[in-house]
Amino acid sequence: MGLNTSANTGSVVMCEVSKRVWWTLFMADRWCSSGIGLPRQIKDIGGIVDFPMDESVFHSLSTEQESLEGVWKPGLWAQMISLVQHFGPIQDLNRRSALGDVDGDELDREVRHISQQLELWEMMLPAESKMTESNLHLHQAKGTGGAFVALHLGYHHYSTLLYFRFLEDQRAVTDLGKWCIMRCKHHASAYSGLLRLARGQAGCEAVYPTVGHMAVVSSSVLLHTLLFGDENELERARQELNANFEALVELRQYWPNIASMIQRLVTFQNICLLSVEHQTHRLDGWMVRFLIEHSLPLEEKEIQTLPLGLEMAPDSLFTMTQEFTQQGRYTNFETPTHDVNEGT
Image (cartoon, rainbow, N blue to C red; front, side):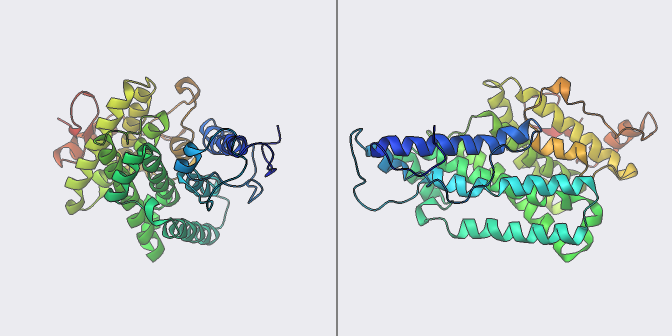
């Protein structure tokens, strides 16, 4: 079909549609391939295909128009594409980290590099594309509120994934580790706040299934904070976890598989509880699948409370649950029609 070229044949509309089809495939490959545990099929191709134009300009084009009137400028879809190109390297970094055969200093250098790229991406956003409430209302009025929200949800999700491995206890002893933990918590919190804000704005709702997966990743960081964070972090983390949970329950009306995503949060919490004694909270193969492989059917994704071969006392989980419940740090997911509260 020649989609992956910049050949300008036909009307402006047809050329733009071809670009959008190609970049839709590129975006889907970044999400769908990883979601089912497959390598990406489309390579990072640089500037072979021009980015899509601004959405409002595209929607104003006539079908027979042969040339673009005015100056070309990128829109939200173009910003999403420039952002998602960092998603693949983040996935690769986490998979390599889980294998455990890569030098830690090398991984840390890559984290710094990708972190700088993400910060540069945010800095270089056009003024009207930056995350502010006034811009949210601007895009809401233009009919692009949902795309605007999706752009920034993606930014916070990718950033959370980048820093997630530093939640391991041994990573917190270095200055880089402490900074990455702070950034991980910041982006998980920001994701929750933006999702809550968007749910209250008509035309800005994000109700596609990957929003549920991203909310689970955000919630896993918030759960970790509730279990192991400082006392002054707990109230905010619980409020943000409640907000994410409300969004997940709402999404479950449209996407029944959200119920299995909620169950994965229960398993994640169990692993965190057991890590107190068994040091099981680490970025291993299971954790990478938890973070990235969101589309595998549950029956093909056997989730175990402990890694294979690890023994524990039968009442270890019960004991830890009781202890953390008494501290007000345990989250009860058994009543999905109500707020998430510390277990009772």
